[in-house]
Amino acid sequence: MAESLDRLMRDGEEAENFGKHCRHARVAIHTCAEGHASKLVMGIKGTINAVFLDDLAEKTHRGLHGRIEDGASAGGLSYGYDVVATAEGEDKGQRCVNVAEAEVVRRIFDDYGLRNLSPKKIAAALNREGIPGPRGGKWSQSTIYGNRTRGTGIVNNELYVGVLVWNRLRYEKHPDRQKHCSQLNPEGEWLRKPVPELRIVDDALWARVKGRQTEMDGRRGGNAASESLPFWRQKRPSYLLSGLLRYGACGGGVSVISATHVGCSDARNRGASVCTNRRTMKRSVLEDTVLDALRTRLMAPEVYAAFVRGFTAEWNAAQKGRAVAQEGQRDELKRLARKIGNLVGVIGEDGGSAAILSALRDAESRKATLEAELAVAEAPAPRLMPNLAELYGAKVAVLQAALGGEDAAAAREQIRALIDEVRLVPSPADPKAPPTIEVRGELAAMLALGSGQSDAAASALASQMVCWLRGQDLNLRPSGYEPDELPGCSTPRHLGATA
Image 1 (cartoon, rainbow, N blue to C red):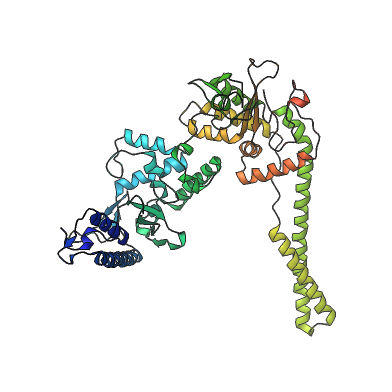
Image 2 (tube, rainbow, N blue to C red):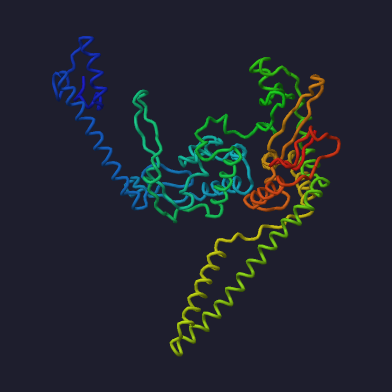
């Protein structure tokens, strides 16, 4: 029994399917409004009801759009705010800052953006202190980080910087599962409305958080779109060298075999046809060896000193020449400005001859050319520091010491950024012997750490060094290795290796 067919369903396809099942079971459909619902009545009414729903959704959407334009909320309540109800107790979309919750929001942004704490650690600390979550329960890392693309999570909510964002998502019923699901609208359809009275976080802190998120995307080798990946593809590496290890015999990955040892993944997962070496290595020994290599062998002072003598002289001379050339162009611009002023003065007094007018045009043309060249000229790159290897080694030692402290996660991230790959190479003569460990360093990250330059500046300098190295024959190899055993320094990301 139903008042009318729209009380049963408002989807034409569902109505037709329901009618088929009823007719097959010889069950007649009667409603108070339509009486006997024949196949024709169900088809027509199902279509009308579906159109009515679409019209209702359109009107509701337009009404919410008007509310957002007035700076009011279209529904829902973000953590950090309270509802400002009318005298009758209605929620008209007005919000105000909840002082206590706002302090928690600022703390989360500080912990993530300034202290480089992980969302998991932040959530654990809040739960230890008994601070209720947004829904009164416990905090989780997803509550804090959420999904950046969809704007969910504390650190992605633009309302905290005084911007109300609406129409980011649309909700539709899935045609197969018959459940409502959300879909992301194109960014051009989003509506942003400034609401400065609701600001909790300043722009500098917001930018710091966004910068760290971008940095983490780069270390994952992806971007914000990678947040759609399963959680096991996004979590922090469990160990210092997770994802950086390769097995030299087959080129496959190296995975954790037991609580303390690592070994070749292919040998265990793909069988002897791919790799036959099933030897393992203690993870702690491997990590200690790699850390020692980072500190003492990669960019080792004796190797770096031989390299830096040639490169520094040539590079600094080139930069000095560029700086001198640019300074000469600026001096010429000053002379041209004075010359143009003098010529204009002469023309103002007696009108000027054809020769004077021609000289003025030439001077202005040359001035425009110089200004254009200086506008696009690159600033001289930073000079290569002779003691950079020592500074780099000292900073790696500090990071190594920090692995056992409270900043272990941040130190581990920085150390991982220095490593391009760690390769375990078994001995062909003795398969039972421990494998040789080759550590390949990320040149740009090593330069950035040692010199304190930005990542962009270090990357630019690294690319110049690589170009220079390819044309040299430095024979920079640590003692104890034959030339054919060790990758040379002419390869893009090497300043050395260790075993």
